[in-house]
Amino acid sequence: MGQLCGKCMKLLQDFVSFVKRMSSSLVQRIKECLVMISECSCLKRNGSEARQLYQPVLQPHEKETAQEFLQHIETGFELSLLGKNSLEALRTLAFSENPGLQQSAALYYLHLSQHLISQLTEEHLEPYYALLQSSDVEVQQMSSLSLVNFLLEGNINRDLVVQMGLLELILELLELGDSTVQCNSCACIMTLAASESNQEAITSAGGVIPLLALANSYDPRVQQNAVGAILNLTQSEWIQQVLCREGALPVLTLLLESPDSEVQYYSCTALSNLAANSHHHEAMLRTGEGFLLRTLISLLFSSVEKVSSQACVCLRNLAVSVHIQADIIAMDVLPQLLSLLASSSTDVQRASIALLWKLSQHPGNQDTLTCGEMLNTLGKLLLTHKADPVLVGHAACIIKNLILPQNMQRIMESSCFEGLCYTILSPDVQEEPLHYVIACLAELAKHEGSAFHMLQWMDESLIKCLVKLAGQLQHTEPSFQAASIIQHAICHEKVRSLLKCHIKDIQCYIMNFLTHQEIRFQQLGISTICKLQEDPEFSSAIRQSQLMEHLERVHQQTEETQKLLRVVINHMDI
Image (cartoon, rainbow, N blue to C red; front, side, top):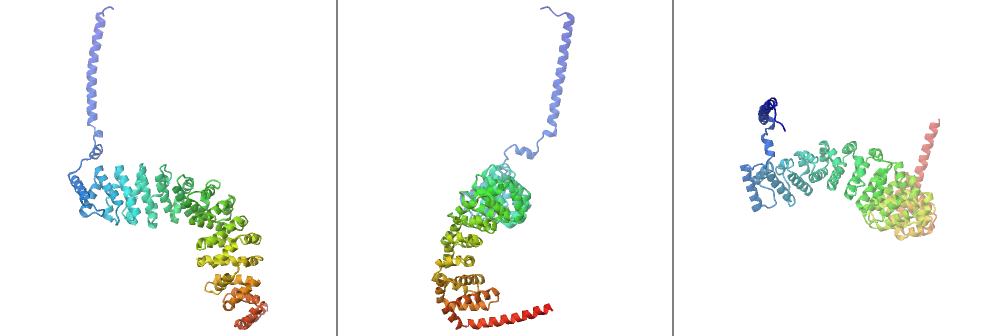
């Protein structure tokens, strides 16, 4: 390789000198730029931001307070409310910026909530202002859990929590990402919402939307408590409107298919409350083509009794219109309802028979319901549950609804007559359901052939019971219906023979009927006398009693009434 000439050497030396000068200038410019950046205020941390980067240092008074409070817990802790000094120490810990001290305060409240048997005062609740707003998740978890415990155990007045403004802080916790905090906060809202006044406060504070959002949570604990809170809110008609407006109906409807039975129960009960108001029916049934009805009917098969029971309640509340009833019947619901009537759970039996009663009111459903299995099941219920007013009353009402000429043969072939007759004789049957049973038997007695069929159950005890009931005019309807049964059965020799032991009692109630203000009682009394007179013994007894005088008086009053009516009519013709 050759050497550089003088000219090239000179060029190279000049280039090296240029690079040195430029490098020196560039380094200086870099230094100046860094100095300027470092002196800019944008990189200067203020006091609060600096504190967030480091564990807060305990202030002297906080150290002293923590030591005193620790000593109190270790030496004199008796699970009772703190005194003034100790309460002030607890407040200091709660309002501290040090997470460790706040955790101590939250832990104390959590421990206290599991053992306290007295009430917390307003001043004992004040530390919650700081604990619920703490930036430390553990503090939020413990403080929200202790608050739930206090509410559930009744250690805190629910209205006081709202009045103090803690409700807004609890609602803010719903927006946080920690599922434990959300779970506890929803539980607080659910408990507070049990109070009517708090329901409005929760809604006014904007609690509906976050609760609906958490009802779709993937955490089953959060979802369960959120739906439970919504359930309590549905007790208010005003809040029902708010819930529907904010989209609660599709949320609750879809939750019926939840794998969690508690969520199913809460959502089904909430929908039952909404269905109690017929104004919501159209919106409730709008989701899918019969989706809600199909889902509710599927829940009738639930192994969880309270779920199947509540599904019956919701269907009953929805079954107001003829069209909805027809849709329910068309889904072949009868076999499952009959299965529920045989359940060992009283609540399930009551809910299912109430739904059947609702369905039996529409004539279009009566042919489907009047099957042998249905009628025998009702008769068996009357025989085995005489002391249950709900089952007895509804069973009698269903049978009465099904009494049609075309159904009489099936009713007579069932155990309904036996169940009704034995229920009347039971000392355990209550007054109101007894009235329904008598009304049902009176309706059956009107139909040709059924009175004859009833004879096999007519004995001395039943006749005596009917005569006694007929004489109890203070109970107007049962008295009339019992006398009506007797009047229709008198034509049979067996009944007349049994009645002869009660001639005086019969004369007494007929006498009262003849003087009754209602025409139907007078007419029933007269028709009963007409049938009794076909028997020589009854005829002789009537002639020798005061009944003849009463009949003559009624006859005279009737003639006078007819004369006056003829005068009025003739005058109107002129």
